[in-house]
Image (cartoon, rainbow over all chains, first blue to last red):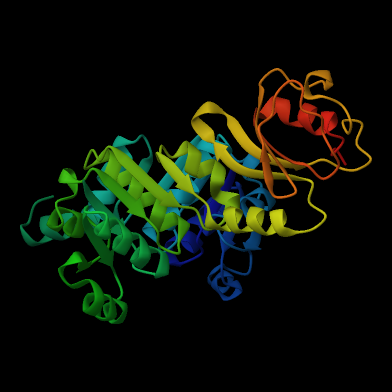
Length: 134
Length: 220
């Protein structure tokens, strides 16, 4: 699969590494060049410096041919906007958007975006750990 | 009307101020603490500190009661989310967003925002209109009807000069609204003869724009 990942933070870099090891074609976009240092030396994918809500940057990263787009920058709104661009303008089939704010996550899930909320998932696993549920 | 304005920069401040002066109930939301303090000195109770993207803030200001939500922050992604959340979660009837980067116009249109205002594009077209070389200037777009209001300066060498309007091949969906000649208003009729440097204001749809430019000889 061809996969574009927006945001090369801890999650973005780890995800990119995992997908790359599995043999997928991975493009990673981040605003800062320094972020790519999180990727291991053997990383085969492509790195693009730029703003994730800029169509030209997305095009350079190969959004048109991408099978999947994953938005994991630190900004909820940036992820939301980039994901909608991937879905509505570039017609990417699989778009996953990380949203920290549970309210916004709920709203955009209802609007049809595939969302992922680390806040809810994290709180739930901590809750389960404390209350001894599994 | 109850109007919520998100983003207390210069635009947010003046929008709030002028809507308030027209008798509306207006609430301005500003995220930054320092900016909030200075806005508060001017606007008093009409400004709230918070994030217009967050439920906590929007619940506090009673967003579901709002008739209009206007998002005018400097960040397009924030303006888009403010409007989409207002519409989806708080069922606000009318959402208006400021578009900072003209490149984002397409996604703003697709995002279901009711009205998109682009200061960047507006300033650009105002400047274009003032450049001496401009012969064809789009003044305003009426998006819902797919129409544009354009200003055409008739070039001296144009084929249209010396002809009556009825003799010019105008596109079918084109309406000439007025002609300005030597700073005087000339109501356009079928018998009006065009002179060099007449400023013609026309209402035209997108398909007719090129035809209109050809008719007046302003197609480059």
